[in-house]
Image (cartoon, rainbow, N blue to C red; front, top):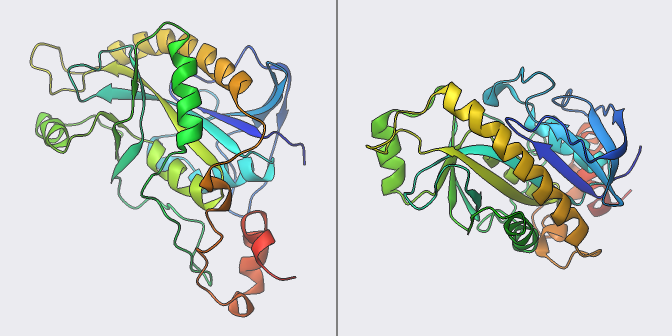
Length: 288
């Protein structure tokens, strides 16, 4: 399997990375089914990178239809250690204006029925998730985005809603009362699964609108969002390229050993089927 230590998952508006040199498609099979699409693997600023369009080519997958387990497992099989996520979000704060960038450090889950773990079916593990993003990776991403000239907000909670409809006004005001900074539909599952896979994860959240809470703004529409997506995509590509070139070679964060004390099941009692299914994730922790 071809290897790339850095992964990029592109959200609405970011379906390809023109700066990715020598890129070619790579299809990855996983025990959890097919990923959103083939991966584009190539060189970005001289570094091997694997890119995946979260919603698939042509934006054909709803947030609730994305096979998050397959996507993250495939990144793991490709050798990815750090995953940079780009996402379109709505702002829940006055100071976060459309076209601003947020690098969240927390998540609130408002999804329903999505699978958010690799475990179960014979294996029990509980990873620490108090700090759901990698502070080392998020710091580099923030600095890189700032160098593109956009306004960057470091930290804040990303509220992950089910969708695909946008919020009601009542919901939007409720989320603001909780202190959330931005609202989106995809990143919570990615963050949880990346932690279980011992992959560093950070989000470049690109604000397209004020959701529907803002009394002086028109309610969010697809037309408004799409128009700003194109502007955000150009910023995202520059920020990602800067981040990839700035990352240190070795990881010093705890993400790389998130499973070290998290597996509760007696290794001797883990079924062979589960061992095979989770080989890319659990292999180094289980006796042969």
